[in-house]
Amino acid sequence: MDRLAVTHQAVKQLLESGEVEGVLALRASGPSTILHLYRKGDDLSDLALWPKYNAPKIMDLLQRSAPDARLGMVVRGCEERGLIELAKHNQVALDHLRLIGVACTAEERDACRCAWPYPTQIDAGERVEGIADALVAEHDKLSLEERGEFWKQHFARCIKCYACRTVCPQCFCEVCMLEDSLWVHTGTMTPPFPTYHLIRAYHTVAKCVGCMECEAACPADIPLPVLYALLRRDAEEMFGYVPGRSVDELPPLVVETLPQGG
Amino acid sequence: MEYRNVLTTCAYCGCGCGLYLEVLDGKVVGTLPAKNHPISEGKLCVKGWNSHAYIHHPDRLTTPQIRDRRGGALREASWDEALDLVARRLSEIKATSGPDAIGFMTSAKCTNEENYLLQKWARAVIGTNNVDHCARL
Image (cartoon, rainbow over all chains, first blue to last red; front, side, top):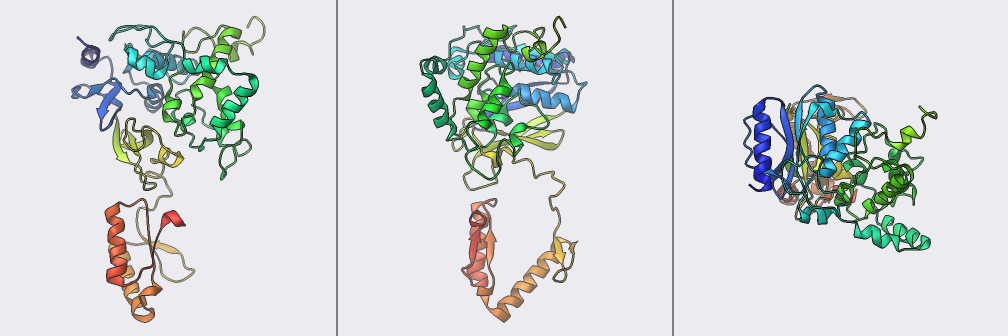
């Protein structure tokens, strides 16, 4: 059976088992797919796997609305890691969730330049190994001055649509610093260099799992995941921390601020 | 719990970006861009991303309001009463001051067909070329 058929079967079984109220998965709709909460008895023929969306953010929304609901979710690697990070920040409850793991295809991996294109448990699809992000490698070759110029040129195209913030599963603050006129003026374009993008970048540290949704949503094609990947690499080198790897690993911003031995 | 997405077209300007309105238990709670959409290719501007915001907004007017005298307060009215008033006053103004005393504002939020109808009505029925558009405000 192909990956979609296996996923279809797993969703059907989970719904029929009565263990969950619904399963969050992608559904073919118009030109795209879109997230949908399938419920028992629903027609599953339009279940789909690609293009992916910011599924962890939608699970956050569903659990906020119904904190006690038991739900299922079809997850790929980045989505599972996104959920794990959200759980560490008390945004989603993993023990209320039943996950159906899907491995990404080589084409999907390449589209996302993904280093980790599979979840912990693969229920559907074949595991393909991750690749290094070629854009990060190119960026590494630049001098300090060239890097500054690189980002300045990219950020100059920003239309301040806030899509990177709005689409991001890891952006869940009730009050967003980027809407504070102290940092980002209203009524002017482009956002002040570099506050908007650097505030956002710092806020992704030890949270961003590299799901690429910000890049997909950016109307100016700014390679934001490259910036966040650099910070992710720093956090790993300095603190041994990899976002989304394990629910038991505490984020360095918590650990480093605890009293010694705490 | 019910969560579904409804494919639609952004109502904020004439570009025609594709988006989904997120419906949670019968209420529109968010917007997601339509990936692979021929116009917007999964991107939206800040207005598009907020397409859902006015639907259930408490400030949204859901019934016509009439101000009976200049400086007076607005009161809620039925559509029949409001349309009767508009028709009567437009006829009066046209009769006393001529058709060019009247102007029409139309909107990118409407369909092409609705905008066509409004300019046709302004020019052929009222008799004025005073037609403008929210994008120039």
